Image (cartoon, rainbow, N blue to C red; front, side, top):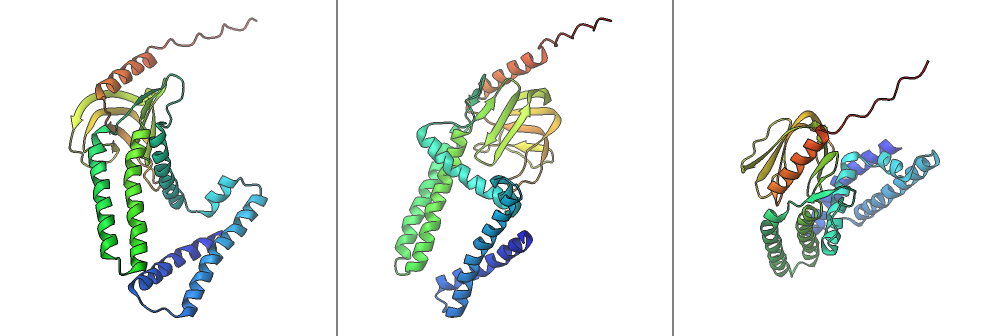
Length: 278
């Protein structure tokens, strides 16, 4: 049933897209076709609801049941959008994410992209006003484009808000490097072989490299002894051995990371237990 529901959703999506395009273009669609499309749209959540209840009765948790019903790429896209919207709330409330642990240092990295993102958001606002004026005589098209334009503005602001509220985080045993809402990689300190402070403005795509550029710039390079996994947006694995990132104050991050590595490598070994008496 789960497989049938998934294939039904994949088949329904292009059909609904064609119908929306036809409605926006003013093409007359027979009432029977519209009724069938509406029935299909209503049937899909009903079938998923029945499958969800069956999975819950088998003992799965809510999260496990949702993961069994919804493909992983779709879940990742939904989580990404939710993080962007949550980032807007955290940005307004000035509450950064993931910096509350003990012995935690946060290093922001969004300052050098602020002007670009604000400019992009302003251009999107101008485009929204212009399209509203041009499409005033087509109410359906105007409503669709207005929703898309407003969401685009929120998306752009959410990207910057996610970057501003999700800084790089250094703890006693790991460095957590992040970018917007789609990159969050934990690098254990014992896997960092070397750290260099170097400014780079060009980054070629190479295997086993992760470039987290801000404003086309990275300022720190980490060489790892073992690869860490930096999953792509849709969940595909990506092992990396070189990580390049940026921080608003790269010298402070370099200094703090160097000190943390020194402490981790010079930590005293645990005292062995005394031999058991015979």
